[in-house]
Image (cartoon, rainbow, N blue to C red):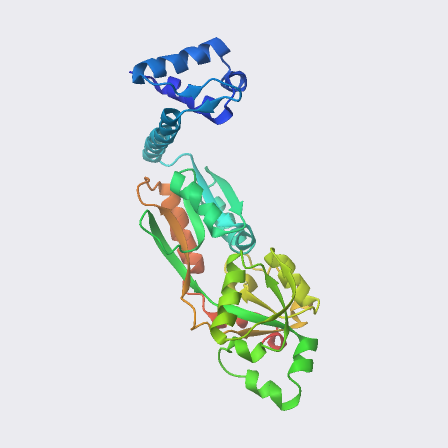
Length: 337
């Protein structure tokens, strides 16, 4: 029977695909590493590595690498469970979140969590989209994911926080130019259809981004082709260019939230009050697209530690039931319609 230490040596060698580097990383001799690999190969009766140049894994080696990840995730899960039983005196929590959403949602949430549970070490995994952040969640290297709830929830459990709405930001000078006189009247009232702004120039995120996909889908469903003067991958760049008057832009509503429940801030992290005064904010009618729920997701088959339970509970306390009106009314009265 093989040992966990031998399996660990194999895993490091499979990652490095270089016995010299793997041995240095493991603080053992190259001969000792080779002995561990040989024992595994003898045990299973297969070759795990093709020992050519470069060193590569065989099919059997790739299969063992996948199984080794599951084994070590199970071992880590047991260690977490034992730690959880030991009176919640220490622990770790790894959270994945899209980087821009993290700038909005994490400051009040992590600040409050750290004040309540200073013994818990927090780790963040940040990325530019949902898909790349779900992979470490499925792999078990991330405990929780905050963001748009995936459509396929077979392997996940979700705790919904709120339904995301979308707004269009229009620089004041463009508003005066494209909606002069009585034309402004049509923008008063409830959510506005995106086709009402079809003549405006737009700053938009690339279609590869989630927000870019939402904008393109809204326009496609409305039968319009937007005049995009600048395209960017970065939401903060998009918002900044809009604020400078280059074009209107569509953003998730919560990116305008100042999160006053815990932070006591007066302005959204993306805009100063001076910047907001340059813009008009209109809620978009998004009934033509599916609802988008912001949720805390976790792997279905992974033990839920007390740290994770407390984090989810606090996230619900802070973010559940924040309405569109609550967010918009926190801005300067002249900054939205």
